[in-house]
Length: 307
Ligand code: FAD
Image (cartoon, rainbow, N blue to C red; front, top):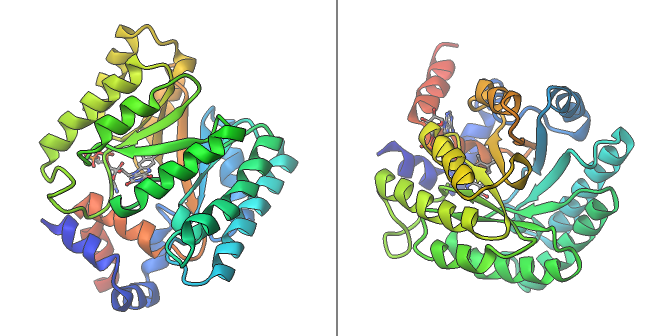
């Protein structure tokens, strides 16, 4: 029951101000968002790649309100690509972007987001890596898929995300499971109405398995984004049934969540990518992590009252 309340709070400016200013928040936030700048996260990138993991980097900051901020978001990603090139880690580290941060919700936002994301995709390709377009709330998805399709004309390796909780996703998966595509499947992290999305955990889990089967049986490259042990073993079984080799799909998990499992899967020979977010505007990302697991909220509240 707490999850939807926290997700509603994630859209509230008042809560944003309150929580962002809370004295101990930063310490709790660090578990999920381990730095504010590229300099902060370079040691983490080096450490995780050194342990056999791959990464996808997310510069947080979806709640922008001006085209200038959208341009700054693009520049932050370009600076990240520069650092990855200098580190020689282009092939191990990709980027995840939220089109909202590139201006999608502003006036003329579809074109603006496409214009801002294209140079990032180009720069990524130049160092041997790629970009995945994250899935945000359902009202943004037609625009996201259209931008994805447009980018794939020149950069076919550009990935996108689909969310098992949405009714539309099975059809999206069928369309996307074609040769050369890269598709991350997740359960979905936004507050969605019952007209468009399953609300019950067991329904979402069942939908996840149906969609995963479509991706595994298809010709694209499935990226299994989940920490759910049951879904991870089903994914392994589906990969076996569909004859996929370890380099023909990958697992993805979020930084700070089930870190032992990241290493265990990598040690078993799976490709394991850790989604690592950084930046100063962490509120939306952090609140979604709280909503996913109410125990996180208890820990957060305890850390505030125990001061
Ligand atoms: P759950 O059933 O929620 O969790 C399974 C177990 O994992 C839990 O029992 C718990 O032990 C652990 N766990 C899960 N979440 C947490 C947490 N926050 N804190 C502590 N433990 C936790 N969603 C989108 O809508 N769009 C995206 O683009 C997107 N990208 C993602 C990228 C990656 C790599 C991943 C892993 C997730 C992404 N998500 C995205 C979030 C996703 O939709 C889910 O909200 C999130 O993954 C939780 O679902 P789960 O599959 O891990 O299963």
